[in-house]
Image 1 (cartoon, rainbow, N blue to C red):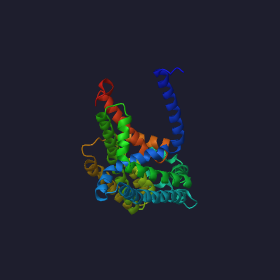
Image 2: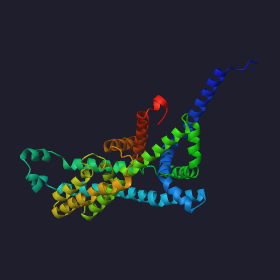
Image 3: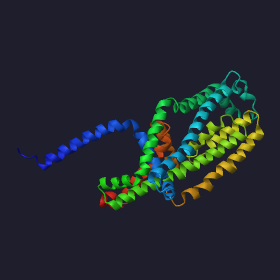
Image 4: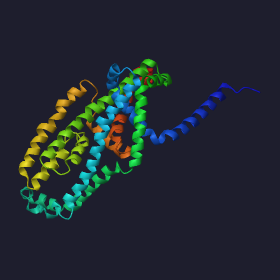
Length: 347
């Protein structure tokens, strides 16, 4: 029997490989987002994990300690906050547009702030249906926040898969790193540089944008609670997204909150919240960013905003992390291209 040519063997191998990879993708595709998220978490936690391993010599026990800490510090508080946000969204609807809500008894035409405006502006404001606008905003918040918890069984199962994947990513971090080097067609030196850049860029996105915005959201929520704005946790959480908007930033949330206190007859609380927003919330970025980022890459705020919103729309709640991570990967690719990757394969 005549042996097949090397060309035939090569194409047969390619065909079989494509078929096997396609079938494998069909198997893992339902958990792809969960696995990617676990990989991102492993990248972010790896510096801490290395420190923990110095104290706990066993790699497996170290990974278990990291997962337990991640569960207690991150996952449990996020779940509690999410449940509370759903409750607050429901309460806001009842408080604002329920049968006894303040919107029904509020006469905007008699408000001192509105009457001080030019007549043309007053006419435009009076044409706004406050009740319908309130229903739309509150309904959107309730629907989108509640959607996260709409399938409890799926959420629990995906969380279980996430922690298993995170455990193995932490335990086998070095093996995965070596496998990536072996499979890549680039030189090991270049591969190592690429992986380091991706890790650095991902961490800089999280520290440079999301952690700072999270700190602003915490202080904003404290201020909203102190000065009596309903749904403080719900509106405070939106500061994380608003903080990425160039120029306006957290003012997109805190401004309407101050206006709400004014128009509902609480001018002193409104002034207090305004001062809190400027002095405390507004200065968090200036204080924390240099310490957290230092000389690391700082991403453009507009691109981070677009990646967060696009990630939320495409991936759901987890898109809040996946969107900026994909942006980080794009920035690494652009940097490699600018450094002549296609010309000489060097970085």
